[in-house]
Amino acid sequence: MLPPDLCIRPAMPADLPRLRALFLHARRKTFDWQPAAHFQLGDFDEQTLGEQILLAESAGQCLGFISVWTPDRFIHHLYIDTDHARRGLGRALLGALPGWPTTHYQLKCLTRNQRALAFYAACGFIEVGAGQAEDGDYRLLRSSG
Image 1 (cartoon, rainbow, N blue to C red):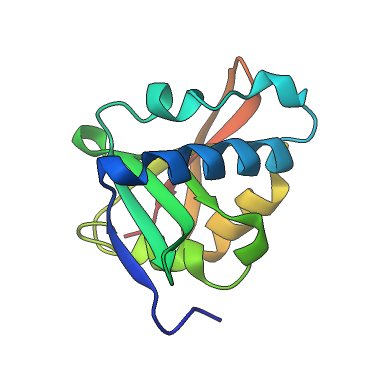
Image 2 (spheres, rainbow, N blue to C red; image 1 turned 135 degrees about the vertical axis):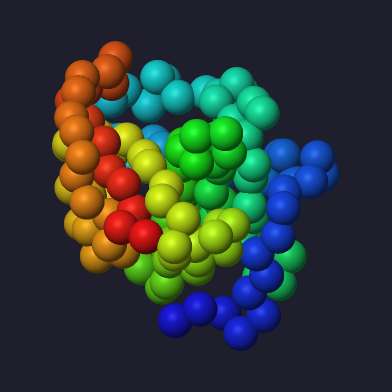
């Protein structure tokens, strides 16, 4: 259940420490097949450079975020604080994207991340391709619009 005071807004520079911490913690929990040392606090800045970032917060707490490379409408990251997972925050962040749900967005999801694949399928994403990256096999997904 979504918090009644949920706010989804563009991230600001003051949000960076909270976003970095969430990104590090969530990736270490999600990608448990990789060594925790593979993920670093500074990864957030490098991996979201130039992207539109929307932050979900409640009572001043960062609950999750979505980052999009807007020229290609490519969702690069969608992470929810693990203490607040499975409460509708991911859907709310998707719903806050410009033009959602009629605008098509794409993303890559690692094949090993079965929970994320199930989430995106439930949100109407369809598989339009597949490939292999440094982190493993992935599925290319597109929102159905």
